[in-house]
Length: 479
Image 1 (spheres, rainbow, N blue to C red):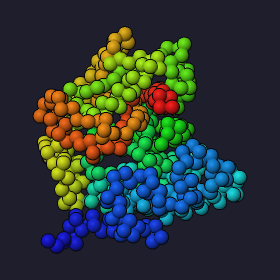
Image 2: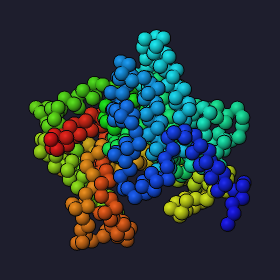
Image 3: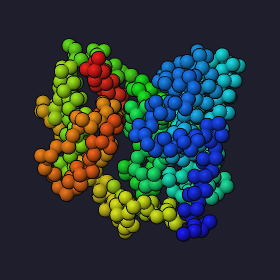
Image 4: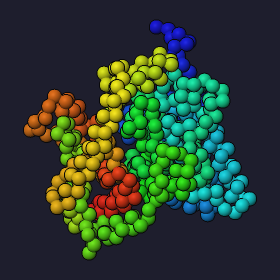
């Protein structure tokens, strides 16, 4: 069946071709390499690294904190770093189609300008000078599309074709990253209708499957039409906790609340970090101070976690106990905004979301207000519940509704010989049965296992410090 040139399929196809055309010829993979990629389960690490030379490997293997330091001391130029990351991203994209926007040309030009600045002034522009950063495709960068996966947004400003807006708007966080010296080199895939977002220090995803994530509830949120009660939250993704702190503290140093009314006026509070870290030794073990007390959310009683996740939770729980710590156990607009963006091009909902996001009558204003009040009351009630567990052994969290602070850390990787299916398991319900039948140890073998650590609202510093202690304890267990 032929595709009409004005159809959403044709527009999507043209956009993909345009994006791929921005990959330099010398970075393109031959058909043999592409065929080999289809046979390999783990594409990060040795496989991708086989396409890089020694200098490029030495660059991308650096943690972000080391990378900016080496640029600052002239061990690397910003241009060397940008070229290494752009090439690695180009290889990754050809293998698994992970980029919405390729900004390599802009990135290399930016790197040259940073090097010239350093040469002329003898200093860096800011703490992120020369650090390659990729963005999820929800942030506006000048001279580039922002589509969020909507075909109807291609070549527009969120569907608006006004010439004064298209490719001329820059998100506040983009301005701040650039003012700090960062190099923006790509925008990663963002499925339309997605309910979460992050921006990345991609010194991570193309070279490792291990990652850390810190959501900045206190600092940044993104308002979507019809979804103002519980907005999306910006997060930093990197290969170390120190990388998360570097980017987070750098962003907060710009005082973003002076420019964005949605940003809460809370600078990075190092005293909170120091107080938490003082409760453990360098190996994560409890000291003479008050030990940590963490609850474990084993199951939501709707769908049980797969064997690798259960093992990850047990590893953290057992490690913390041995270390001396305590182990205590919405679519308000009727999905109209989503359909409005899809209608710009005639693009349909993807099959997995057709039932969940089918068009409904919008929620009446008073009902919306009533639910907002219920949400507020729930937050207050849950806060009281959390307080009541100080001397108890268990509690759970309703993280999304409560907008709690979150940090994700890696624990291990799935192992088909260990994480086997429990034949004696009795499903909690039909959904749980389907979930368990979908588990295949061979398919998940080698996949990363992570845990999400949660604290109260506006406690990013605390949750970062707790993650630091938990990670230290896990590393001590391995060594």
